[in-house]
Amino acid sequence: MATTIIGIAGGSGSGKTSVTNKIMNNLEGHSVALIEQDYYYKDQSHLTFEQRLQTNYDHPFAFDNDLLIQNLKALQSGQSVEVPTYDYTNHTRSDKTIAFQPKDVIIVEGIFALENEELRNMMDVKIYVDTDADLRILRRLVRDTKERGRTMESVIDQYLTVVRPMHNQFIEPTKKFADIIIPEGGSNKVAIDIMTTKIQALVRKKD
Image 1 (cartoon, one colour):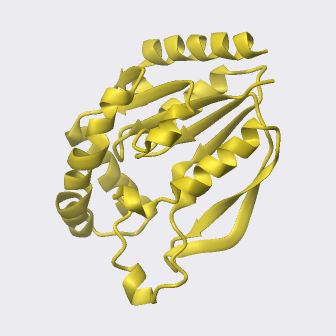
Image 2 (cartoon, one colour; image 1 turned 90 degrees about the vertical axis):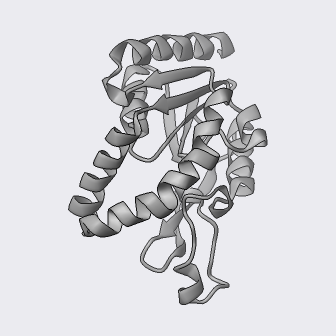
Image 3 (tube, helix red, strand yellow; image 1 turned 30 degrees about the horizontal axis):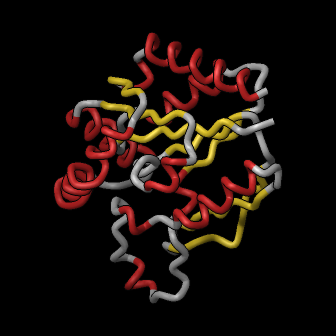
């Protein structure tokens, strides 16, 4: 059976994860896998630790899309793959991998899920989660201070100097590639239900 590939993009804190989880929960009866684009941050083992600290993770160049595309093609052809993981402490790719098996539906979720043309062309459905900037920064502020032990000042500084300009330059423009735009993320039940119905129809068509 052919694999349906869904791309879900949007800015940091937009609610991509909530949308993804709700769509996955609504696809009962089908095998579904989630591949997070963050798994595919580039290997930086050839750089010094000081050089790795300069990496801009909010820029498209931070991602190994060639490997992501290679893995997706293998899954489409019925092969299992070993997906990389990232060591955020050492700022490079981890030795650990995650085994993925072919599924009916594969969701690729990440801020730059719609940025790469070859990756976009593999997708049956392209979704952009569109949430106002004030909500996105507040969600990021809560997450990074509570879950990552960062100070409020450091989160705000990173947002103003890196996250916001990168969003405006690289992420927001990918909205034009989306088949559907979901405002307000996971709270938009109607849009998620419509999207789920569309995906279910696509999967049945490929049976």
